[in-house]
Image (cartoon, rainbow, N blue to C red; front, side, top):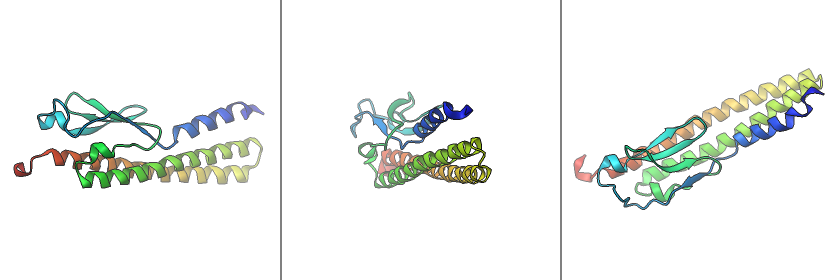
Length: 165
């Protein structure tokens, strides 16, 4: 069988790519040293090739890297209740997206295995269901990114002095 060596490796790589994410966050106090101006304190989401980071200020100092596991950013975003609520929405949708990505990948790989074993009906059914699950995962991923963006926006909004609005 041609696929016998590559399939386990492909399943492993596909499975690891979609595991639920964890964030490695630096300990950041509410009062950040050198954070006298809004430009030095504001957070933003920065997307890289294989990772997402939350950075602070114009110099893009990394506050957190979103990767394997669920991000523990509650202490950073606790300045604003709305930021915390948005971040919870991010965490839920990100978890759903991650698990659906794994499930969809398994379905697609199972379709390839069925095709290699000349079970065309199963191959088509598994491949189509895998692709549909992956589409659902992308929808949850998009929603998660929107929630993360909202959380950062609400955090930044909490930095503005009340009288300056």
